[in-house]
Length: 341
Ligand code: PEP
Ligand code: MN
Image (cartoon, rainbow, N blue to C red; front, side):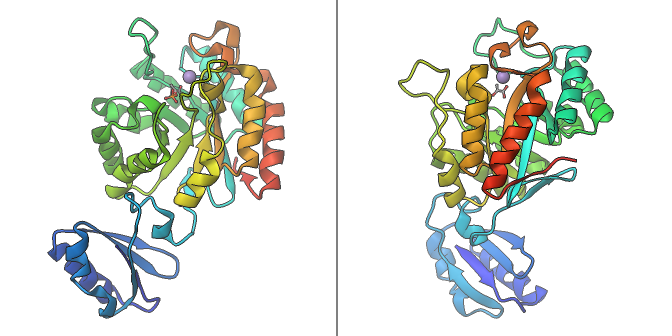
């Protein structure tokens, strides 16, 4: 249930509604907008309805949220898009973000040279994994703590905010020291204790859609983070598994407009993991930008032939500037402006 307060509602009236919601064992999620305050009442529907808040002082209207996800629903923000701000770069509400960098942090030279190219090319943030979810336990698992240290150095050198994956809640502290945006990988999208931990951390998070997850399941994953009071959630379409074997996954372009209808959260697209092939990265990126994505997360490497993982899908660092220019141009045609410093 969503309780929309009147513009002139006093703090006392807001507090009183919160107390009444909590008195029936429900959770009251207070969201203060520019003009008015909305209180999301999450709990037993009937008990909340019985409070009869429609007539309470300061209450403008009570609107039921019909979807199973509540805080992630576009109804909750009555159509106003969420803008996530990371160190001055914005995502959502007309702001387009380009997150770029290697699949995994391999070495100081690899990370710093790629980071420099991302900065020069006009990227908004630097991506790179220190902890890698690999299909085979025998594959390179990431540099761990040393990878985080190198990411910190790259951030100091370039000023680019860092997007990096957290795979295990036990690593939350060291990851929080470096990550401006925590990435939840596709394989962890339904790791609910990890999502709740990130929710409590308050740090911005990019949640990748699971390989076989529905959009509703993706939004329920976002709900786990939002429920803890963390509103900086970015959704990511990264390709899903279909019967098609010609490409690694199938990029669900429709997910972009559909998620933007269902939710107020920004939607970012990962063309690299969807395609698994460099030659498809630009066309998929242009399609994503044209379909109204709020950003792109793309793999870039200074020497893709030598990459430890995902080299075949990496955009060579030398080509990154031209790539950004083309994507930026298409994003602008649908009213989204690249947000980079
Ligand atoms: C990645 O971003 O490097 C990655 C492993 O992505 P995903 O979780 O989407 O497979
Ligand atoms: Mn990768």
